[in-house]
Image 1 (tube, rainbow, N blue to C red):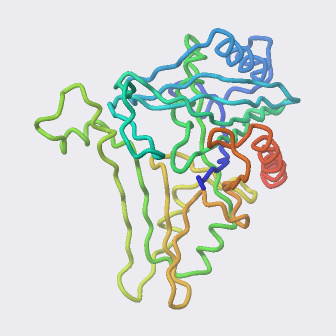
Image 2 (cartoon, rainbow, N blue to C red; image 1 turned 30 degrees about the vertical axis):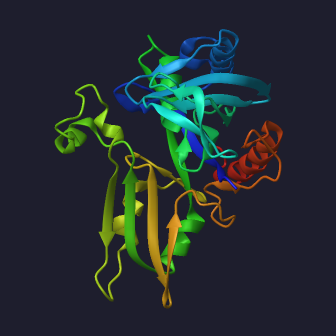
Length: 312
């Protein structure tokens, strides 16, 4: 069965070039409106006008399928996909190529992705809970789109993942032997150095490679967690840490417990860690979970996050 996750992020809005100047949600940017209402208006407008956000550089597209208002919360579904490749299709029942149907480079999938924004009154930081399908999520694309809503204001939206203290405590109690940081979109200037000489100059090289930065301990040695990991996190004063300047999409730590080695992935679904909620559904619609079930799980998760973080 496919793996679905709900991944939590903290988000705020800052003045471009000055990240320390975080804009409060109330009377947002002296508009007389709360950011909650402004974001609802933008998302609802996109839904009604069937607006399709196309990011040609990353070859991704996103649209708003639905939105519902709740007290201090906005929730619904995005439709999200990628484009840029050509492919034929095989009917798995007949094991034959489907005739008269072919994916073209300008075709993008339209997969449903759940979202929930918690925008508390009197605060300047909120929580976003976003659905991931396997290793695919909308965070980076959504972050760019939310910032485009603020065009002309010199403001930017930043979303940062939350990592639970429980995960770090688990690593602290074990021998940390390897630490991997994975980046799926390599910076263009680096990717170009490894490009195929025959490649099209217009191709986005950053999607052809991924980068893994590994820190590995020699035999009978272990890594210093304080030096290897905690420097990348900001102390929040509660049970969750925020990755302050995210450069990597995924972080994996290999710990040694007795004679066994165990890999902990930030975002794994073990309830103890709670930095993401991994979901399995017996009832799917078109291979994806139903909105109602995702919403119920997200509310449970949000209540946990509010309790642990104080939000904020």
